[in-house]
Image 1 (tube, rainbow, N blue to C red):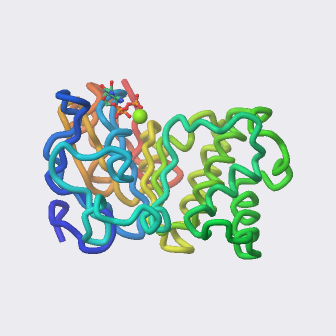
Image 2 (image 1 turned 90 degrees about the vertical axis):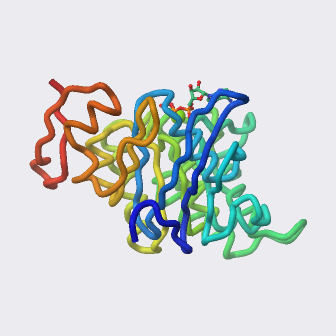
Length: 264
Ligand SMILES: Nc1ncnc2c1ncn2[C@@H]1O[C@H](COP(=O)(O)OP(=O)(O)OP(=O)(O)O)[C@@H](O)[C@H]1O
Ligand SMILES: [Mg+2]
């Protein structure tokens, strides 16, 4: 299947145009997010990465074209059914004041619970595993306001893990994290992907980490899509110049052999 064919499994866009009032941010974009793989969206500030991710989660409606999930127009899927299939962590999520880590993560179970239905052992297990996966088991009773930026970010990631969906969209999940925790979060998402077949789509700024952890990249530039495909095809000198106006060398990462960007 070529990039521009629409998959009937997983997430895809078809002639998608996204705009804020009359200002078009994404124009006529058709692409397929490979099912059960790790995809990263890359590009300069303001090029429309968050806008695209939000449209993929139906948080904004297209000005034209479609987002499809499993072949269905995402706009036609029942809200609760969608929340059981797809979770999104926005770029700057806001927690209610004073909420604890455990309570925040419990919110991830909302789509799975009936109105006033009791909290089940399954709900508790999923939340505990999500907290442990991000290394916050010990801080479950702490207030979110009392956490460091990195701990808070990991609490939000635990929330989307607790939602237990087959597709995870995360907007800059490594912001605020030190390098060790960036690697930990990306490894965690990778192990979710490998163990559960979860389709993961991240917006990332670190090109080298994106190349290392992703099976597939979507590179946007100031005037739209620059390239899509595996890191070896997307992270090239020409594409980096087109997307970022960046003059760089691309060499094999000495640890993984993935493309590594060395700016001039
Ligand atoms: N709610 C909004 N109303 C109007 N314009 C918006 C809105 N949100 C974003 N924009 C504009 O749309 C463009 C794309 O924004 P977007 O947040 O998608 O960029 P981005 O690629 O995620 O950038 P960054 O790397 O800084 O997060 C920007 O020019 C931005 O100013
Ligand atoms: Mg953004």
